[in-house]
Length: 461
Image (cartoon, rainbow, N blue to C red):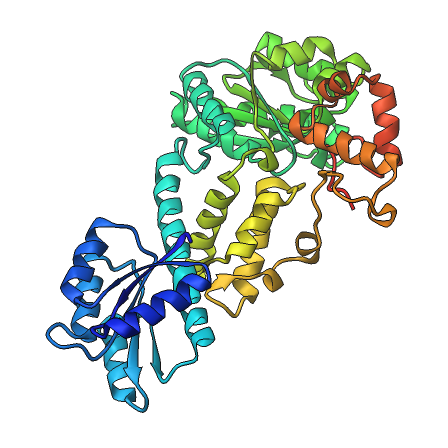
């Protein structure tokens, strides 16, 4: 009875029939034979839609539409008009009516129209609330999040931005680590200087060393001129070392020395040059585990990890997924000339249940694709990629006594392990402690599931 309908008809018998029929279909109704009384209740109580007869003495259905459109423009009005009176129906639409039905009408068809109006109202209301929440949750430049985890990130990032301390940002791929690094730079006293991003795994060690520290003339083949490295190019600003966990071992010692001495030596040069840049690093790896396995230098880890910020994965951020979806719909809808595009209820529910292994980046791509392909005013299931449409939750709930519907213990274990990984933000060291497993045992199980060691888990098939 949560779908509330305000029925307005000067015929008391018609009011009673409409209320009986709608309530039998699980609508909640209130009826009035006086449009003035109906307007008074509409201002005092919550309704999802108004169903009104067009031909009433005094204030007719057209006047009622205009009044509702003026004071409650979000409430859809459905008008009932006589058969063949198409001109009246068009006039009602122009007056602000959402839809119309003609007499004599089929009650099942009328109920479908009313249900569609209720869904329209609730979707419009949800979009408005999301827009308000987005404005309130945009706490750090373009970063969006109302969940407790993101609010804590915003608070800590604002505070650390006022210092020159080194920051280590961790989180799964696609969570927005570079966006957070840029926001910290923009809030710092160095915001007038450059922000220099470095993708550590993008270049082999020899070329990356030259990129970071520069090189002298003749340092290697084709080094015909001196090159200033990225550390010097970042003077007065911030250098962002993205995916530092993939830095070759040969460069880790040289980077540590540069950070401790605050100076660099170009490849092929014997001269030290001081640099003045803040260090922000990011990783999608569990660096604590990498240190324990001697895959990452412990002293370098402590040097870059003065302040640690861990961005939670999207699947643990609750309704943030809908806030971000609305943000991307606005962006891509505006670019496509479709500013009013939204999400259907079924898509919103699927988004809330989906695992989002690619995090915010994946959501952004899904929305961009949906806006480009949809033929509707709201994204529907057919607009989503197969892996999202076909996704099934990792939760295992035993509710059946049918052996054909139950799953093997190995499958239960797999789903539980991926769920624990999701809850820990992909931190395999913490997940292993919760599961009561040795790290090596956990890694072996992940490999048997087909989950690469650098990943944090996937949805169960």
